[in-house]
Image (cartoon, rainbow, N blue to C red; front, side, top):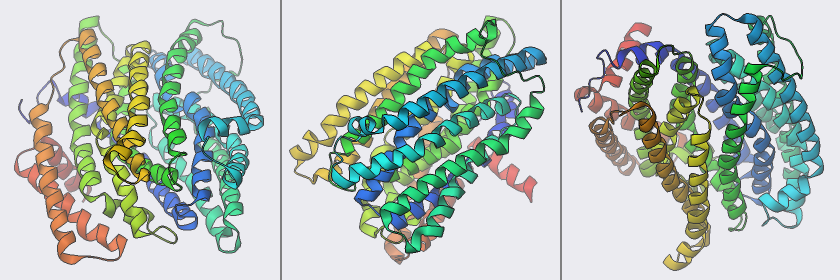
Length: 533
């Protein structure tokens, strides 16, 4: 396999989606940056404590609602249908479909938010059964606050679906900055003179305010893009029914994937105090490259793939080219991210979280958990691209089957790695949290291989850039060795100074080596940088 992908097979996919992926990545980068500031503030005020455990668990339970009905499901079910109508210039029908979906989402989520508030104690017992006493009571109180925010997030996801279909990517992905900012403001405004449990409640109310602002900042532009929007609950429409048919399997698929995360929460709630908070911190770092590099490309590809016209062979060939080209782009960024998590995770965790009650030993703990996450980082990220390809082909059932396999493996392996394995190795039980992330990584690779083999059966052979990826791994390992050398030589005590002195040389060595061996993505970055000057 050659490294140069600028030939006629690969260049069109890069050209068509490169700018869109850049806009998505820019929006995600800003929102993730705000999210890291939020996480740093939460870690500084709550540390790794029972209050932090309760807060993390409380955030995850209502998020189940927003994740089920939100971005992923709408991207898979709504965007392929709506984007096709936009491509056909059928403005009337597009407005009708968008209006029905918004009406249905508003109705269903309102009912579920109401039920969720009343059923909160049962959710806590199921999701975090290990919580007792004050930790359990605080978690119940916080979940009741968080639930309305989750409902507003679903409406924001509808806005995102419309904006993405019209190739308006930046606003929808930068708007979460407002949500993060609202939580940060609440923590800073009340943090100095408020008891920690009450401060957690103020932060939860900040989430509600931020969710409302996130929705309303997108709404005016959406209304301009959909002038024929009609709010109705009538589903007597072929395109609406197609969205609903696609919605079902994706809804279940997302539910299965979300179930995996809640199983981790349930298992971690039985580990020593602080394990759940540390697991959440590691997962936030792990999701950063997935969002920046995997989601940005996958999101940009979905409407483009869905709008592809031609016969079956032409569509299959176009999808194959897009998948190969996008895999290269994703791998260029995700491979060094995985190596950084494995080799320099303490530096990364310290730079983000080490403030206030969050200590250096806490950063080491998060590093161990983050290293487990790195096992499946590449598979999870590229897997999103394959999911987009299935959804573009209106196939939502195949990803569901593979997601069930992944979650089953994650559950079985997670239990074994969280308890029996630490006992067998004679290590502290709190390191069972690292076993949870490692087991999820193994399951992610199994799912990815299933997604790839299934797609090849649909569209034919997809070239695997194995040599290309191997070179990326080698360059990243050499870069990490350089970072380690700086770390051992300087011994920086300030965690943020350490990140600057260690991670920047790591990145420069990686870029230099990839440029020296002719990796095309480095050359594209250098050309973009020169144009920006």
